[in-house]
Length: 351
Image 1 (cartoon, helix red, strand yellow):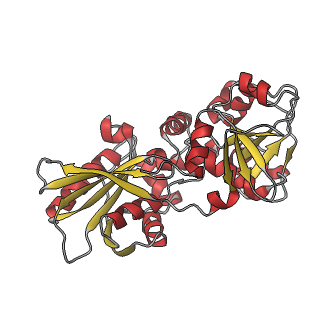
Image 2 (tube, rainbow, N blue to C red; image 1 turned 135 degrees about the vertical axis):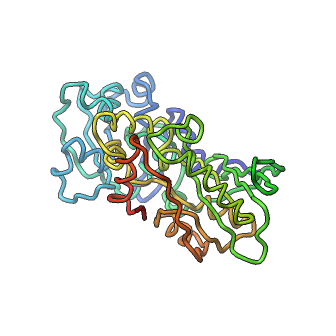
Image 3 (cartoon, one colour; image 1 turned 180 degrees about the vertical axis):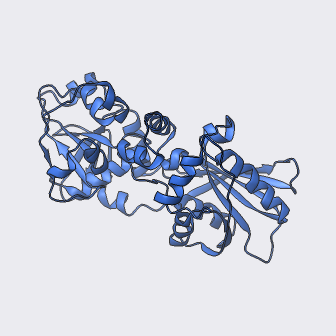
């Protein structure tokens, strides 16, 4: 079995606090703010020439976006390193959970980075690693992984089938569980293949992992009830497929999702919390889901969802959605605002 490719290795290095070099028209060496210690920074940047790069969304939250000519929320913004800008202060700048607990930091002198495309790609790697989109730009520093700009921008998700077994589930037709491993980042996803659906496009649910809702029964979202009801609907239809995808927190990762929750405790809605963290409204990509379906011999589906983004995402990855089947859970006092935000700001087709 092949190991992770250059993109996967770069993601792993960022998670472990080690520098990565992106080869393009102009090479760029970066290290993640969240995992880079002061000791490592001192070794890799002894002359204190490193610069801090954050996402446009985070810059906007820090009131820096109006100082740029282009207000692209996804564009990278660079802050020159001042004597006071150490690893701890950089993390305070990157983590919005600390915004209300500290005095203002600065002054900042934000600039557009010299190599825009490589900088965008670097922030993409940080997001893929489940880290805050904030990076040190290191000058003339050795790197522990090298990935080309073309490898990042031309990346196409792929999966390998690892194992398959019977999985009896209460009240459902005979079911199999199929374990997949992504060949790029090593994440493991599973498919539940329920009953039979020969001769017609199967009913399919793409369910993003939600530890708090699926396992702990959190009332802040509708994920747990959606998961159970989706399996019931698929079983009642005689068969179909549920993909359980490792896309916690709409693709921002578990730790960042908890950070978003803490911001929601302070009055932000789910979309604004993601943006303040430096992410977009929804960071999910459905390339792995499409690859899983193709591995199961499926290229046409009836999709159980209220999210037009899932329909568009699957179709852009080459899976035809012949029908969208509504899938709405009743609101409760704890998630009513969350569902309203999904309808108003994220375009979910909720009544």
